[in-house]
Image (cartoon, rainbow, N blue to C red; front, top):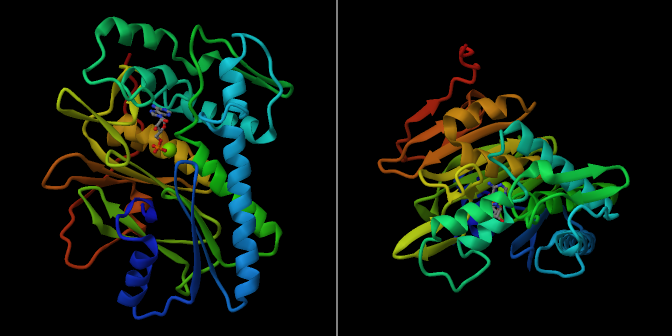
Length: 356
Ligand code: AMP
Ligand code: MG
């Protein structure tokens, strides 16, 4: 969803355009900065500019704090400490790392391993962490990387975390930005903020109403055209939204483009999905689920998300004419952009008959 993150047009411009389209002014102040490898935006409605600048600074420092705990690229982060510790050794980690791992492991288990925070060796082998690669990895390298992947090897208890993974390691890129949004969101709430939005690379959470009486209006980006939105959803009551897209990051190997989300069950980058947007009560859960459902696809993904209360999803397949599928709850809230003829297939979320 867009919410921003994914647009080539600055999000502010898109939101302002949406507001204008609704005949509304945008009495919202915006602050932009870069963190967690992406663009961050804090927006707040209100007349007290000095106070809004102060809370935006608090949001920025909270995101920096979380990045320092969860980054794969900061040697002092909890993730780097765990990745470089001897396998099986228990380490004390921050409450942030513990909390994000808890969500990651829960989504991993409930998605049948479509989401897996130990996907790091596969990211490496496909060249996402190793820019020197120019061809598809050979089967032997893939098989070796797959032996080191498996969320069941991450052990978490009240006292710490241990990685019981052959040569495996953690990559929280599919969930950390959402956690950063939640951390900033909660910090601003504790400071008394009532009408604001935090956005880290398309992972967003909103408090209050934003520009409209009903809530913050966010656009779902068109994965085939960065300057376009497919439609909008109104977020209320502290809801979050996240989008995973095949346009976000990719490598080109032997002329073929591979998106940065890997199916840990096959070891290969996912093909066939262009974008998945998830609504959820927290940004951490929305982030993990959007990645999980990008891997699982609409049929399996619709059933996975049905078991998470308050969560809805919209799927765009990587094909034209555009094939859009949504859970019933998402379809009911989604307003397609004017002039766009979208045929939305509403997913049947009933569990299928059990095979004997
Ligand atoms: P997102 O943009 O939130 O969908 O996250 C994509 C990022 O998550 C990638 O850049 C990897 O760091 C990581 N990742 C890739 N595939 C998976 C997966 N199957 N499960 C969990 N994390 C993944
Ligand atoms: Mg994600």
